[in-house]
Length: 237
Image (tube, rainbow, N blue to C red; front, top):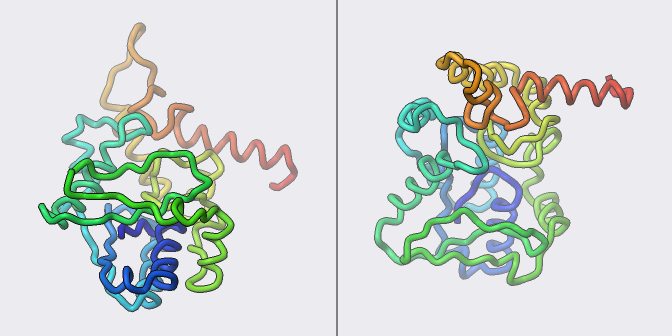
């Protein structure tokens, strides 16, 4: 069972321990560390590990994000081109299991309409206990509240993952700036570094194009400015 540091995979670990102890006894828990996780994720994993009573094996690609960015020609990952997931999560997992036939437990809920980004190896069989047992979002939060608690970053973020995750909404980028200003600046450095490599001229792709900012909607400074403007409109700040 792969743990992301987020609510769904953590709740699945708790659920299997409580409802399927025979499965829990045979499970190996792992976490693919990109090296770009929030400190709150590491703290939550430590708490979860204590609750489960089993080691959470830490895996990694063995390389920093900067290395993978370089070999991908400076193309920032995006929802359309998720090379980061493939290189820094799927491949370490595949190396870990080797050619052994395994069952991979995935925490997609029955009220979600998305596909899991999982290995395509024939020896890896993915199963979805929450879908099979009809658990929804409210069940997941209740499981965590009754046991290990909710990860701290959910106060300002809706998902786990790297601090520069391209899936973040404008408000979440603002949350990163307020809660982890150094990480926000580092994410901005990646944008600026990639954009400054090119001498844009008429007819070229715009500087805000996909691949040169974390979001297709603009730079993260622009996203934060819009989120702050909405807060002012609502009288929050």
